[in-house]
Image (cartoon, rainbow, N blue to C red; front, side, top):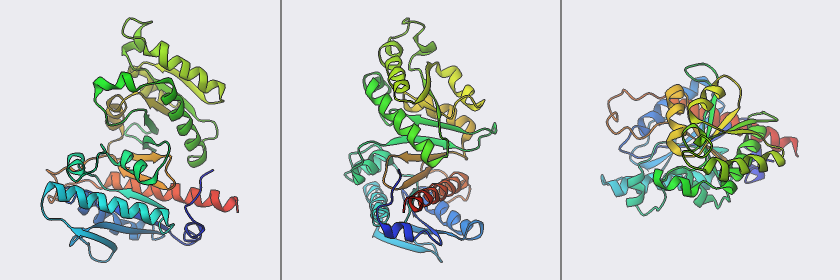
Length: 327
């Protein structure tokens, strides 16, 4: 069952849903989008209270803003102030002062230059919260084709040459169980239908192009079915996503980053949201990066960040309902 970090966190949601919104890298589009999105939700859903977090000197007028150190113009400082905002957002969530966090886009090389040995938000949040397992779920409750698409990345930010060695039966079972439980509890899908995307072309064609489907994936499917999880696969990547969009599956487990992200963004860019499963609080993020080339031009599209706020509020309210039902 989902829980809040404190009883105060439950009580704080009786009249509003408080969410922390980090600005992300100060050189990117995050700060301007955060201000536009926060202003938008004053009209769309006044019960959502957004607490903005970022560096000193970047506070938009008229909002609850928590400032950290100033950005000195360097890449290392950009990474440091972005990371500090995330740390502060986690502290607010763990103290029950917000029900979840929405994170603006960060620049991974800047994070590393600032001293963080993590490739992205997902791994950083796992480290900050001490969570045993987390999952990176790309979620679009609507797509350009209409139906929803949800894709869990079994491995995230690693080189392609390392993927086959990271994909294990244990990892797939662990990620699938986390996904199934999250869909049942947060998305009200009581018996989620999962699909496991193959690693090799044509699911290896009976071993012609690798053997991971037989040695790693089929045992995972068998183990999951033995534990009551509904899962099909391994299914070739060139058909599994279209089958999900046709309503055959509630979510797809992709073995590596780009085999999941490429079809997802093709049909859901602007609607997609990155959701971190397994944390003690809700966390969402837009499905785009820092877009340094668009910063300050006024051309950046806020749609994905708006979807991230909407989904974070929805999931937070679901947690509230679940928590209150157990009181």
